[in-house]
Length: 274
Image 1 (spheres, rainbow, N blue to C red):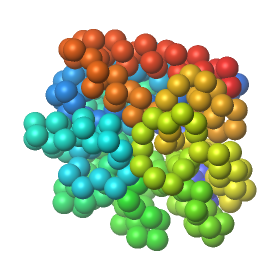
Image 2 (cartoon, one colour; image 1 turned 120 degrees about the vertical axis):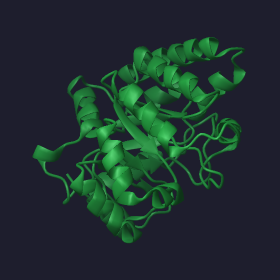
Image 3 (cartoon, rainbow, N blue to C red; image 1 turned 30 degrees about the horizontal axis):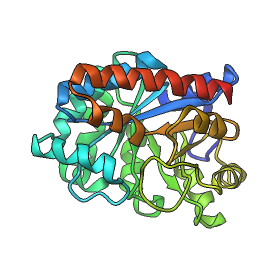
């Protein structure tokens, strides 16, 4: 358990991971960007992922200068930005998805939150029922203001580690996280791949040794077989591009939501097999 988290303050995402662990499996974490193909349809797609078995939903806040998003997610985000999807739309999506009972995190680059106002965002996110934030471009050393705001509003904060992270970096990140640590399985951007990063298992081991209680693995997981593999050593399996691709390939929002639910069901079976 991180030094900043106590049993009395376990948040919604952490509780979802713990609940899955009590069932002898890893948690399934599904990422979907808000605003693709439109805001209402993206909310429906996220709810469909929950119906298919996702334990935690990551709602992406569209941003014009991503550093981690691969081609698939960028395609969807470009459409969302063209439709002028804004943080207030993301908060509405959080409220809608959180109403299902699923732990709902927002995955966002930090400049939009900084512009919105950190304390204002933390207040509004908590009021919408959000669990917290995943911030791929923010490191704990530079996150003092967000750490304080998230503590004030009892929100989870998820920072990333990568195979290149030093032991010292793993320790500081594990201590700063509330919820879980996001372990990027490989160096690079998001996207479906034939195999998960070979160093993912070792990264999970090192991150746990550095003090993290919960470690979820993302980047490259797209099939039930890969979900089973990752569930064998991680506390959670994060899938993004594969869900987004289902939406991109669909000929209607309804068909997209159905495809998302089908994939979530298959991946849910995969994590249980793990």
